[in-house]
Length: 149
Image (cartoon, rainbow, N blue to C red; front, side, top):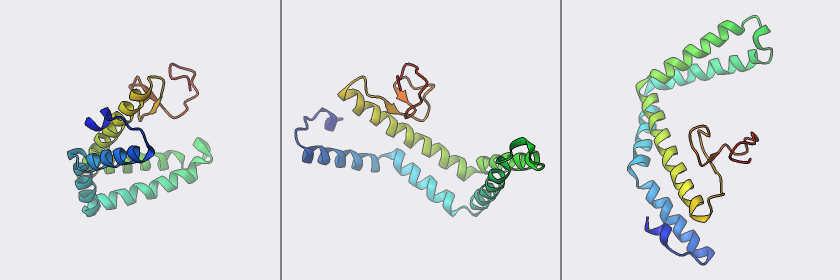
């Protein structure tokens, strides 16, 4: 990436370079696939019904969760939520959207890691999976591990 090799000496140049990076991301195939998958999911009536059903069960679960396993409906509400999530997740347009979303997230994480490491190896980059990404930090995990949060 040529923009990363450029020496940026003023805040204006930095803004120009970040705008160029933003344009590169927006024109990438990964981003375009994400936008298409999102639109397909939004237009899929079955997917929207399954998402609405999942959200309904999630609200019921949150109400029951206050009392935990001692709530009389805890077991059945939990099962209904899991079933609704599974039904939503196996819907083709939802799973395609989630896959595209993960790809975009991976791209953004890689870019963040490149930017951070070009400045210093000590900069921690928030990541979606701190257990598998060596350079990641979950945003202040406080575990005292190698990330020193």
